[in-house]
Image (cartoon, rainbow, N blue to C red; front, side, top):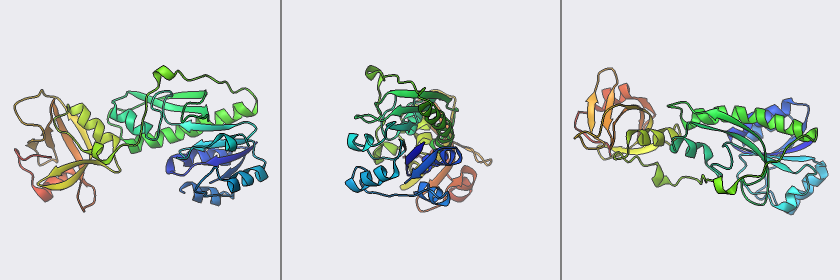
Length: 295
């Protein structure tokens, strides 16, 4: 089967590599660019994948199937119609939940206990095509966006190969998505990365996890910006201490901050203009005191 692979970021790499190691022919279009070129796969980097020139190249390749993984561009029907088997997409959520550009962050931000990977046939609406295969993945308690992305990318590559094999054997099933169950995962705005210490501790932690390791959840200490990269929830009620107040500083690297409901232990931060550091290094360098506040 001749395949045109469309993907750009690191999330797409495992899928490209698994296809490249399979018996299927592949063509491709950057971590993905380097991997494709090293495997001898022809690469295109069009600004518009729907342009006439691109369609011409695909027709010349006599491709059977289009594979889309974290590509970020919508494929119009005129382009999709060039593939006899259509175009399929690997989406990192359990569709119809979390349609859109940022499903992994939204799953963590929303406090979901599980997510997954879905392969679908690309349709006229984003992430709304018929479902081919799904695989559920449990989200670990303090798992970050970076960690979960890596796991889902690996699972996605497995599900993709199963999907391609099923399509080639004419055994792929199609299940329409239930539009009433659809939820959406648009790109987060910069202001949504800001920690609100009056939130419950679990909400604070979910925000930290959703933006770790990059770009980080935004906070402030002594009037300067700071990114919180790792933290965990501790017990405790609302108490009398105001949200954001430091209530414990330990020589072992413990720094506990009050929230609107419960407390959190901050474990890794990145002060503005500095590299990421453990809380022990932060305590030794900045000497935070009980009663000081994070903004």
